[in-house]
Length: 216
Image (cartoon, rainbow, N blue to C red):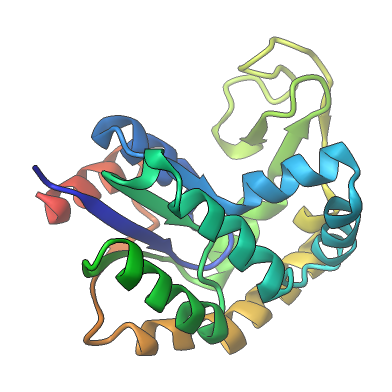
């Protein structure tokens, strides 16, 4: 039986979350999204959530100590024993160095990176068109909706709002942070993990096919 220990890697807006959810369902392994975990904490308005919201609204990264504890707890759970997809972690070299001994201790297996790549121009256009449904919380992209006013999940009309972290200036700041602090993660994983680079400008369906092809 194949156990998939996957990291979905790439800049904000390349589609990591979308593909992680699809591949998670197809391979029957958990999708570990630090973004979802953080948004849950924010909605609960606890101390962690409040701190995270301030940073995320500025387009800044959440401190490593918070992220590591969140991810480690999930990896130690029973659902991750037969495989997992890490989405949005590690985002810094420090996080990667902390994660590596945890993975080696828990699984004693090599990780596989799925790196989705797209130019900054494409990413900015995508994220600037992203909206959240104020009724159900679903995230959509106006470029891909048949009706730009109707939520495809709950059917609400005129319920879309633009989040602060999808403003153009915040997006540019997030991309600058990515190129400065996150790309060195790839160098760290040389010799420690297999890295498959996928063209993120393809359609959702084509990207899924490419990912499944390299994992086969």
